[in-house]
Image 1: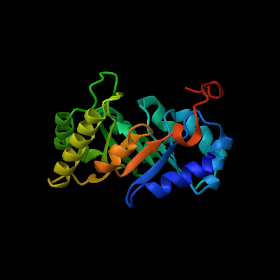
Image 2: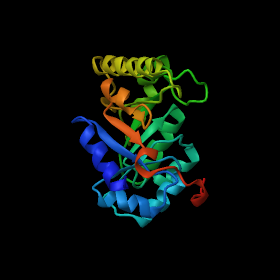
Image 3: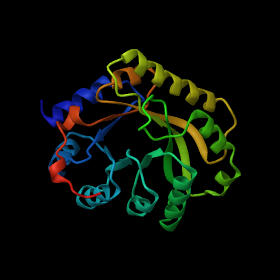
Image 4: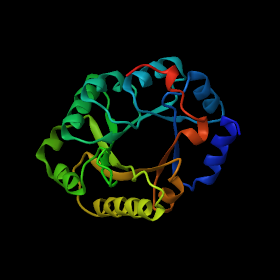
Length: 228
């Protein structure tokens, strides 16, 4: 299967309202160009400087999604152009994104990452911490960010019932937030969950964005990328 065929297959299989984010981290420019030629415009990266380098070399109508853990000192590299930051996991990071967005006269859309997995290695807010953040007065001072939804990563396991339970819990929380008063910078419209191994479950549970990498591009080529 070619990259083009994979793009077409996923695009046709996803329901209306669910976007495909092609995870291009560690992939060479040539493979991204191949996906672009097939009509793909949304790409996901997990390293700020790698994303910035690719942004310089590729067409400017690409929507770049930061899907990895973002360090505050790396926000400046992507602030001028990033389309959506999926993994916001602290008020400190949100404040830095706001600062850098202001310098670029932008409002940067963000998703709050919620820790739904049993693994301690995953980043993210607890459900309680999200509720606390949304009640925090400091949020009202951030005028260059917009929180447009939630992101979650399920436990890496063969137990699909557990994965489904985790995605369902995030969807329920998402719906709860949609039905309560929210700060002016917050609207719950996007739910980013699901990757190559579990996206079908995520879609059934209400995902509006799936992040697919190896099933589109093949195995990652770590040797080709040495930027941190």
